[in-house]
Image 1 (cartoon, rainbow over the protein chains, first blue to last red):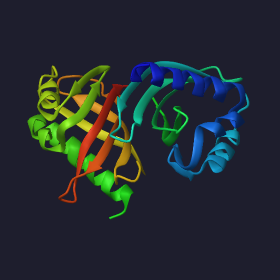
Image 2: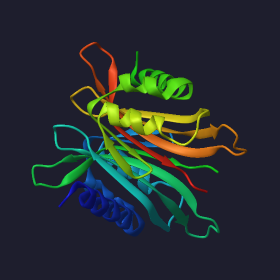
Image 3: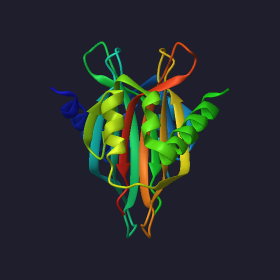
Image 4: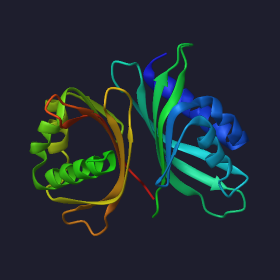
Length: 123
Length: 123
């Protein structure tokens, strides 16, 4: 698979999992992983999942607008940049967001999230 | 300097240079650098500067809203995520944008841009 297809498949899997059951995202992070969520920094898979599952909404639906990706260097990683919108249960208007992932390869030939930065795009 | 200060200083320098004379940004990229600008991929400092200087506006002014950064791995790089707005000369409304940089260290103790992904945030 070419990098663009890998990135697109990852992003679709990530948000499908997020919207179905955020607790399952733990498999995509490792101990050295970092999340910056609206300016708050969290490190480690367990703390990241605790943050994501504590967000003050139950139902959500991500819609992806754009996915850009580039190889991030000789270690075989890739940076992925996503824009999209997020519809929260019970809210009338969707929220626009941008998010970047730095994916690193696992020995099993898959990828995990090393860096994750999320920001809402306020109008 | 802590990573957040380095990232903030880099971002301020980058947009100040962009707004003053885009051609001077060439020093911040190297041959392996990649830019994805609104979905178009360009590789190499010279091609990146050619792209940036060919954008169809003369005057512009970036305003930074948020800067997030994380170390990107053992090679000493960092990922930097920026949101902000861009006022073009002669236009009434500013454009919102998001941009990510993956900075890698140089032997001289500075950083260059290895990955650069830019997207306008359409409302």
